[in-house]
Length: 247
Image 1 (cartoon, rainbow, N blue to C red):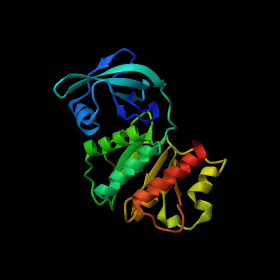
Image 2: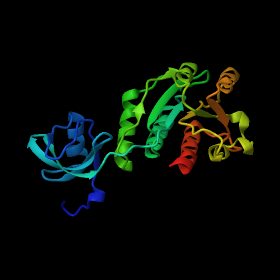
Image 3: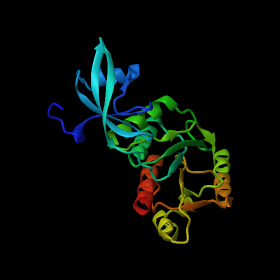
Image 4: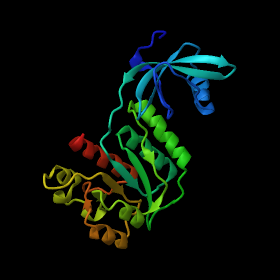
């Protein structure tokens, strides 16, 4: 492998079926990434993966000018089931939202769901761009899957569609209330395991939205401490605490 260990190899997410002995044709974007960005040459190795087939070692085969194929070699890791965790979030400023998507992917979130709220600053979501960021974060972090990225939905519609799942939302009105802190909530043996973390926009939820959320039997408000956190910071903290308890 030209001096590279298997651990140090770059990784590429391929949605197509992976099986030893196959020769696959990457997309044009992936071929550009392999040859121009990574500067791989004929015979170089890379890891390829997806959530269905696991991770395989692959060898680059140059088939023409700026044309490559990938020959699938030995399996490195079998498929793994990730703990089910959805991050629902109000879209925020582009660069902060991209950072949040990247970090949430690195931390193992399985589904990303934008929700529009009364104080949402920008309801427009560049789905292609955010999915590309999530894919790159999955490739770099070593996980075997890319989180599902949903299209934006209004807050109430999203909550109604997920009425059978336990949800927590970060409630600024509970700031500083230690008995309502997320960590205490997650550690309580009498509380069901939440599978959705909902983070509001910069400016928080409106009074009407907060009343709506607290009226739902499957949704609980929690505190993240005394300080008022930005949306992206709150998301990373909440996911980290959830992982510390359940993963």
